[in-house]
Image (tube, rainbow, N blue to C red; front, side, top):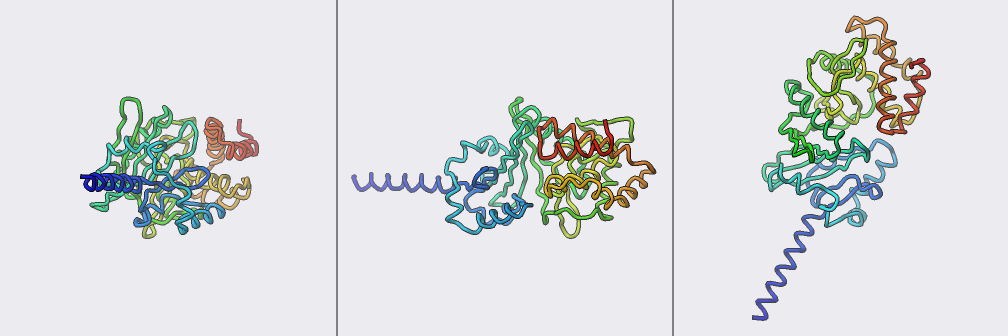
Amino acid sequence: MCSETNDVTICIRISHTLNRICMRYYYFNPLSKKCYFPAGFQKYPLFESFYQPYKFSANVLWKLWRNLPFFRYIFSTDEPEKVLPIDQIKEYVTPNSILAFNLGTIGVEQKITVLGIDEMTKSSFFIKYATSEIACKNVTNEGLVLQQLSHLSFVPKLYLNSKENNEFSLIKTSVLNGEKVTQRPVDGHTLEILYSLAEQKIKSSRNYSSGLSCSFAHGDFCPWNMLISDGNLKVYDWELAGQYPLGYDLFTYLFQYEFLVEEKTRFESILNENSKVIQEYFCHFKISDWLPYLKEFARLKYMFEKEKNNYDLIDSYLQMKVYLKTP
């Protein structure tokens, strides 16, 4: 009897230990605890693409964290449900799914993104989850836009767009595979995508029309929202998509990376280096004077970054407005 009781106790302890191991999550970076990867994530190269360091220091820390198990173990938890919405997300995935989480940037627009793999079918999926009012509107807008862009090959496919009793909004999409994009000159392929987007007749909750010609735009057309697959550009993160002054995506691509990642406010140099491609873009739409569009872009970007208290960009766009003498 005593032996059987001990065996049961041992089995229970082993079961609890296995459950803790299965639920163990490793977080990166060690200070911000922004990205959470499940135990066993090394088996799936896709998970390692979930974090994309652009700065040298971040890249070094990322390599150390990935390659040194003892270092990574220090930054782990076996109670991830205390910081991650695991129970809510599991309602929308199969029981065989393994999930990685990115908590996003803290602020009024914060969202949690999830990269998942069904271990039985090996199929992958992406989830975006929001709880604040503004973030929910953004996620719902992205779902609405993706539903209308399903005919474009460079856009993820929408599987689900859900809003649960005003508690949270969630979208589930396919995963775009490819290599991360760093800043590169605008080429013919990039221009073709920009032309294609501007020609789309899409309904969205974002409309920044003015006295200038407006068109549909991605809204955050930056390298960190792009991948290269077989030489083709793929674009994701469509929550800011809507109607903007013509050229908004082009100007975002040219200036946002330089201001935010390179931390260089070299407006005049960027403008001179890209004057030909700017001219080519607006000539496509039979517009000869593009300066008013650049001024409106600067005004909108300054307004958006100020609303978000994004001090990394407010000063850059303020200087841009002053240089252009934009109200």
